[in-house]
Image 1 (cartoon, rainbow, N blue to C red):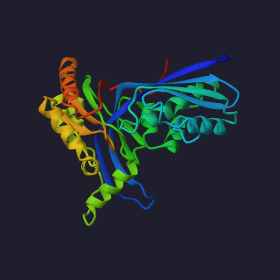
Image 2: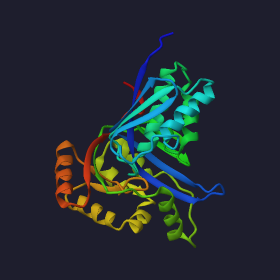
Image 3: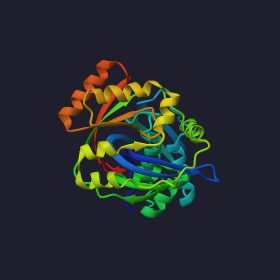
Image 4: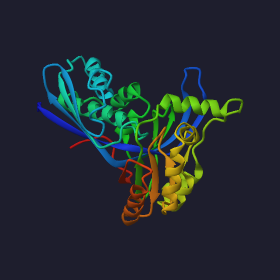
Length: 301
């Protein structure tokens, strides 16, 4: 048995190519159909042997993110330790590149990275299916951070089915100042739809065809997010960001998840650079990131 003193997992951000929100369920959640797409903006989660548990953070959001049991990565380590009958003796360090509170599931990615890194550090060899169950217990987006690639999420988003996707897609992400509360965005979605019959969500056939064809133009036309309107209602400036991105030649744009990051699909690397420069010069966002997808899920490096 090889005992490692340090293990690092790399975990991707996600963008929702489709996010369709069904009626409110009795448990307070919504039935979702989400087509997740992992992109190569990644956080690294390092797990080192220690006495007791600790957490440090560097990079995006290092001054604002919690470093205690309220952090999802910390909770992931404790959950895995408790379930496996070991002490949660680990020093976690997260090197963040995924924007915080940006609708790109950075916190969920860190939890997935902590699960994978701690499992390897403690030599638990937990079956993948069990890791996915732990991930679902931690949050709706955590299983996809382990899975990666492109996948359909149902239920709260935690039940995943892999999607056949050909080729690579190129993205520019426009990052906003400050975050948007996911519960508030869902509440605004419910408010805007009050009095309407909400159908059960379905996977978009045109989106599936675009992914199978590897056709960025078709994919841009099929991008859809039911939370975009409520996010714009709460943060009207997002409408201008989307308008600027498309004015400067993006194939299509969408609010990522519950926002406030906006994701723009572009033709290739050169086009991505052009759109990124234009968005930066326009002053409508605090920063931009370029990325490609699909990217692999959480993996040891």
